[in-house]
Length: 449
Image 1 (spheres, rainbow, N blue to C red):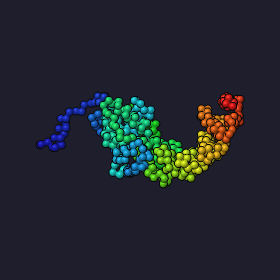
Image 2: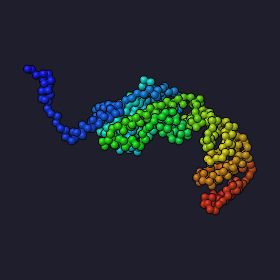
Image 3: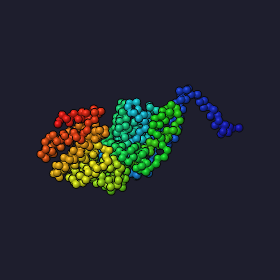
Image 4: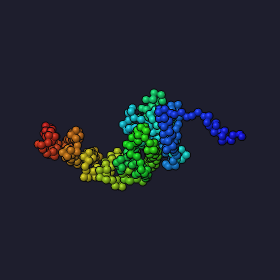
C-alpha cells in the first residue's frame, strides 16, 4: 500500500533540522527587531534602509490646511530679505523636531524629525524616527534628501533651536554634509509682532486655538516627550510614542496653516478684519518694514477700535511720530497733547510728548514763550518721574541736560538772563535731605546758578 500524501509530507517535515535555541544575545536582538516592527505598526509606518542603516518612516497626507499661492507684497512684508526665494511655495519644507532635551548642545539628539510640504492641494507629512542613537546617520541622510528637493525651510523657533541643532548633528557625523538652504523663514518673530499684545503667549498651540480656531484636543506637554523616548530606549512599550508622532504631526499642520494665515493677513492689511490689539500689532510690523503711510492708517484704525490704557498711549505715541514724519503737525500736536493730558504711567511717553510739543511751538508755531512754558513743565515732570523711580538717574541726566539747554536758548531769545533757567529749574525740584540722589541733583543745580 502506497503512503498517503499526508504521510509523505510528514516524513519530509521530519527531515528538517530542529530549530536551535537562541543564546541570550540573539534573543535580545530578536526581541528588539520585534519591538521595532511593533513600533512601525503602531505609528502606521515602515522600516526604511539606506547606506547608513535603518530608521522608521511615517507618511500622512492631510486635506487641511490647503495649499495657497502667496502674494509678492505679503512676502515682502513677512520676510523682506528672502521674499524672492519664498515666491514658490512648492519649494517650501516645513520642519519640526522632537528632541532628547531643550537645552541644545552636542549631547542633544533630534530623535524624531517631521517635515511637510504642499502636495495635491493639501499637506504631505513625513516623519523620520530613530529607534536608537545608532540610527541617527540613516535619519539624517533621509532628511538631507528632502532638503535637497525643497531647500526653503519654514519653522517655528527653528532658527534658534531646530535647525542649529540639526546642523550640529550633521557636523558630528563627519560623513553627511549639511544641506545649504535657499532661505529660512521662521514664523515665531512675526507671530510675536502680530499677536503677542493680545495673547501674551505665542506658543504654537495658543496660536492654533485663538488665531486659527483649531482645537487639537488632548496633547502631550512638550517637557514629557524626552522622557517617553528614554523610557522606550530602556525597553519600555512603544505605544506611548504614538502620541509623540501625533504631536509632531499637529505641529507641522499648525505651522503650515499659520503661514497661510499670516500671508492672507499681510496681503491686504488695510482691509483686514481684526481686533484692535491685532491691528496694533499689524501696525507695528508695517512700521518696521518701512511701510509708514500704511502703518499710520492702521494705527488710526486700532485707536478707533479701542485699545486698553497703556497700549492706547503707545499707539498715540507711534502715530504722532508718523504724523510728524509726514509733516502733519496738526495731528501730531493733537496726539502729543492727549498723551500729556492722560494719567500716564509711562514716563518716557509723557516726557517725549512735552519735548515734542516744545519743539513744535518753537520751530513750527513760532511761539517761544509757550515752548518755554512747556519745557518748564517737562522739567517738573522729569523730576517727578525720578522721585517715583520711573526713570534711571542716567536717563534723567541725559534728558534734563537736553531740556535745560532748550530752555536756556528760549529764555535768551526772550531777553532773559541765564540765572532764570536755573532758578526756575531749582524751584521745581524740592530737595529732601533723606534722598542722596536728590541731594546730588540739588548740588548740581546750585553749582550752575
